[in-house]
Picture 1 (spheres, rainbow, N blue to C red):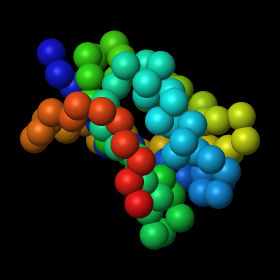
Picture 2 (picture 1 turned 90 degrees about the vertical axis):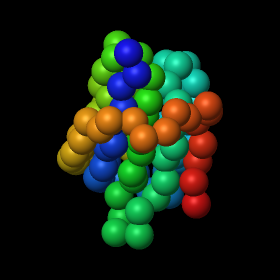
Picture 3 (picture 1 turned 60 degrees about the horizontal axis):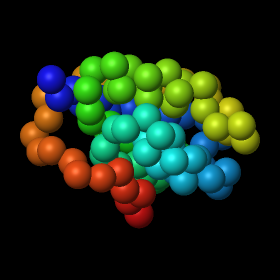
Picture 4 (picture 1 turned 45 degrees about the vertical axis):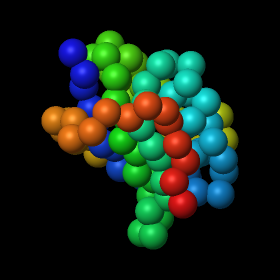
Length: 91
């Protein structure tokens, strides 16, 4: 069953390659969706896939990349309105 989550990730996540790292982790985990920097200084991402893959990606994102520092993660589970075919970095 397809599962989707939207995450707002706060901390030192902008200017440290966090979006590119997230895209790599998404590919390794097998989830689809997107990631972008938010104008208010946090990263927003939507991930979609099988329940176990989405759960694994959430745990990876909560830990952060080796050069980021995560201070807070808000997670919102959603009903998918569309099916993503890839994982993209949005501007």
